[in-house]
Amino acid sequence: MKAKILLRIGSVIMLLHTLGHTMGALTWKEAPNAAVKQVVDGMLNNRFDFMGRSASIGDFYTGYGYTMIGVLLLIAVLLWLLSTQPSLPVILALGLFLLFMGVI
Image (cartoon, rainbow, N blue to C red; front, side):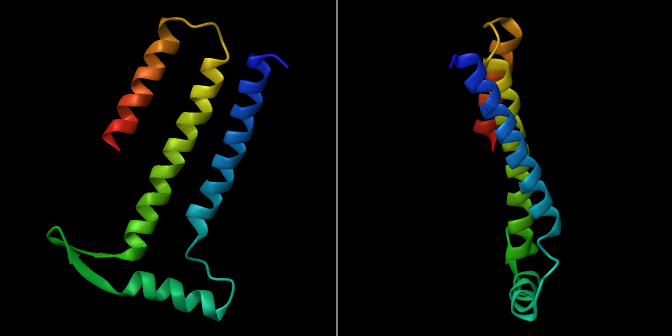
């Protein structure tokens, strides 16, 4: 197989993974049974001071999930762009992606 086809297949698979991750990140607080509900409640209700504000492990978990949605989406787009001929927009997209990853 050509590299172009493999990169586009990888991009589509990454996009599907992003969609699945988005569904999980948006619904993780909905507990399917009592044991899971107890863990979720513990993550959300036990608060502590962190950098001048009240936070919980659930807050960090939610933020990490949203951040990963953005990263996975960027990887899917980058794989698609890399399957084309290298050009200035592709190079700029790669540079912006690396800058975003550095900031995160």
